Image 1 (cartoon, rainbow, N blue to C red):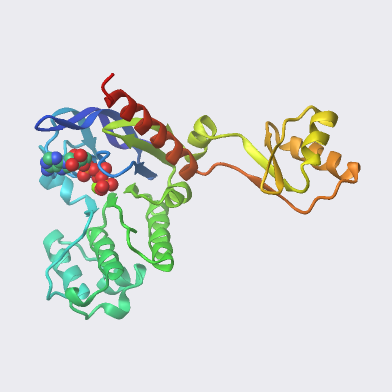
Image 2: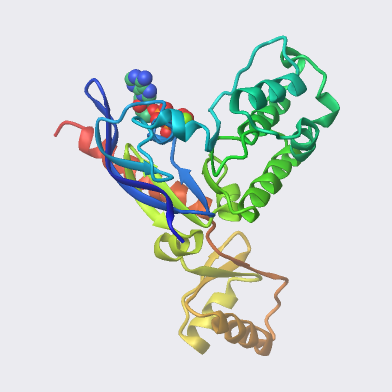
Length: 310
Ligand SMILES: Nc1ncnc2c1ncn2[C@@H]1O[C@H](COP(=O)(O)OP(=O)(O)OP(=O)(O)O)[C@@H](O)[C@H]1O
Ligand SMILES: [Mg+2]
């Protein structure tokens, strides 16, 4: 499987600011890549360089074997784009918009099928300025697919959508992958990235601070899994005595780190045998969001400290 996107040593400076400060990544063809990071981290800048809409300062960028800046006209026929904050002509309807894109790209996409795919068929004849925010986003996605693209760049495609509409977009993204297309997704919904992405990169102040599959990132940067058991503080003493395990007691429950999934069975067995009362248990594992929040928080704390004059 070749790479759809290859980025090496990419730098983008706006006057003095290095919005992208030397990043490297590759996106294998036919996969979903999620590019995550806090506001202002450099995501849209990177996406627009990949789309050939902004010029890079340094580094090499190859999309579908082309240089997006030098070969933009060729590339634009082969990619689909939803820009962040998608806008369109006020008076045009979704059906007309798709027909316009069809003629622009010489594609034979069926407007009805595209609008059904993004669950917007009922608004195919409504003027753009009468669509809700979520409906506008859905039209953006339909337009991004109108030229049968090999790579889709989706910059926050689900921001502002209700939970049902977000799931509709997720299923479109899954079907794009099933068709063998490559999806480059930016999102602030970490759950979405964890569910959809084959690989993820987290960018912070223009630098990539973690990358890999969601599981790899969680394993590398997450806390151990935890078992929580609701019951008296005596449970913690029991576990220390019986198993040499350290348990924290808080809010009417104990919490124990699990090094191994069998630890949970040993701990619950010891509690049950002790005859001490206990209510319920749950296990907790870090999500991509937990890891993201802690990593970015730590980087910001470090940056703040280093900015404080000594
Ligand atoms: N045209 C521009 N001129 C000057 N600075 C810019 C320009 N575009 C972006 N920036 C700056 O570059 C940095 C990265 O912006 P970018 O839009 O890439 O962030 P982002 O990760 O997409 O953020 P968000 O999650 O808020 O969309 C920000 O500090 C922004 O202010
Ligand atoms: Mg952005």
